[in-house]
Length: 515
Image 1 (cartoon, rainbow, N blue to C red):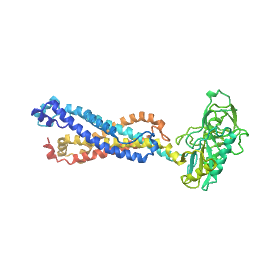
Image 2: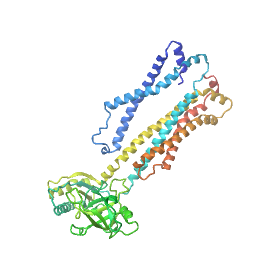
Image 3: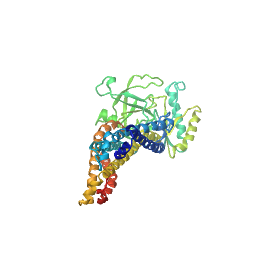
Image 4: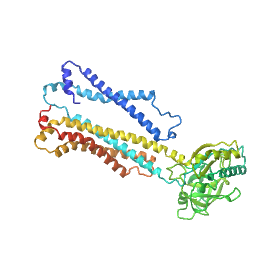
């Protein structure tokens, strides 16, 4: 935008407007291509960093994260389109018919017209606003992620190995034979040196429960089943609570005496106790829940289950699960054919994997073992999406912050160059360095404040959409917004200080003679 005199000279020498436009567009496209090449290098480095930071299971199995021909073609197309999009307006402005009047003007003319200043100012405000929005989103995701790192899961995940043991109704047509087989497996695994205790569950920790069931307190007003509150129905062996160190806070845990022939009992979690019984003691109360029929998809009749204990809340449906209410019942009283074996060891559980597998195959050499992993790995996988989202937003926010800083630096540098004569005159008339510094920084301050205001308004809408992705932090967290605003203001000061300081060093004599 500061090359009108050059354009005027070229035009006076016979260059047509279309030729001048082509010149400017060629320059813009070349700059865009150089930027695109640098962006590809930066993108490749960022991709490698993300692959190291984020576990591979964060991505779909079919996803192949790599820079292939499609990425290169897309980058080329975006670079050319960017050069055209952001080059056409300056090219049209610089080659406007009014440029011929500049040949008659010995000064700067109207180079820095108000309309052009407004365009530049709007772009800087937009950059600051976008940087604020992305930084707020990134900050919220990072705070949420660190909250998840330190969240209590309800269980002790250290040194616990889990594995699936699928069994079929064809091999075990009745529940008594199934329960006998499961007891034999547990006994063999418990005998392995280094194994402290094992337990069955119908699903791995933090990976859901067997069923979601409508539940009714028998002593409360009976309502239709469709209108009842629901909860998870997790089938476990009595050793599950001690093996996973899931604390019983009231009453007792399930026991080996809770067999098929004994009265049906269950343990409820604290959330269900608060929801259904509030401040009352739930021990001895009964919940009406339909019976699970082994090997069949349809449920059995509704039976009363007596509450014998209350257990600490467990993260049943993932690390961020703060809402699950439900019950635990014994696999002796409600057997199922999908089983997970949870084994607590005294050392690294993966080191005992082969010994545990050998013990199981000693009972049944044909028993399949699936999804062998530690509970720590399950916890890590449960946080994988949060880690990926935080990392990606962090990258975008960093780029936006750099662009905002570079944009402010460019605008203030250009403004200083355009006002060289004015600054020199002010210096010649006795303006101090502090006064000249303030003169230059005032404009940057206004642009930054406007950008922050627009960013705050924009972030209010974005964070509302992000609310479901956050854990332990509010979508409109004032601390995050204050920190981001301070960071952006600091970057703006740093970006603008160099050209502002340069303005204070202008020689008044040279400035007055400056064209």
